[in-house]
Length: 224
Ligand code: CA
Image (cartoon, rainbow, N blue to C red):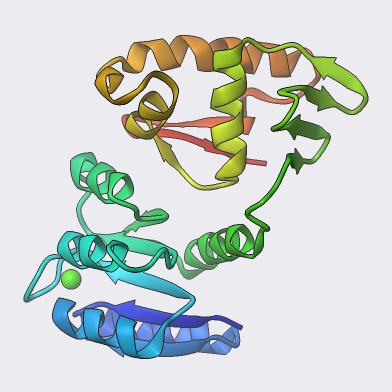
């Protein structure tokens, strides 16, 4: 059971979400505007926030920015806008995931499950395991079953960042910044090359190329 705060001005969407998530056993809190959402986030200390970007008073982006100054609470954004710029902006300032309207409720539930799995995870980890893939953060060694997978440092870092985020989308900007520093955020083509090499190496061990899924124009996400 999670305590979920829904910040959404559209009554039909809000009621539908609240009802569906309550049926799954979650405790729901609701706000119909940005400032009310901020207030409720402070009062109710939710485990997760579902945040609409188009709100009547202050924008969802502003709500997100304010919450991130004091809380790492997982935030899934809802957007009616298919404009990638807004989604990327939200992800870059700390949203955990997004859904574009119209979405179906099972898709939202899957995202909620993925987000809560990440939250329950111990933060002081030395080893990340996803299926047969094992990545050791200390020794920088990667194993598939019992065979070692030889990666360059850049390939290792890309895989590490994606694995640490499990099924969460990681933007090009986030990857570039973590690997090459803050001044290389325009070099998306580098990433494409490294991710291509990484996929090829994984494929030799039977891991499908969809394991590292391309989110066109936005970034990458592990899907398994
Ligand atoms: Ca709205």
